[in-house]
Image (tube, rainbow, N blue to C red):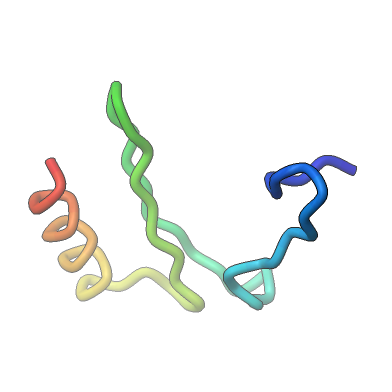
Length: 58
C-alpha cells in the first residue's frame, strides 16, 4: 500500500471522518492546490470562509 508519509515514518491521518459524511471545497491554480474539508454538507458559511481564505492567499 502506498501512503504520503516520508519513508520510515508511519502516516498519521489529520482527520478521523466517515467518508460517507465528508464534503470538500477545492481550487487548483497553476502553482498550488487549495482545499478545505468539512465533516458535513458544505453550506454558504463554509464557501464564504473558503473564498476569503483564497483571497488572502492569492
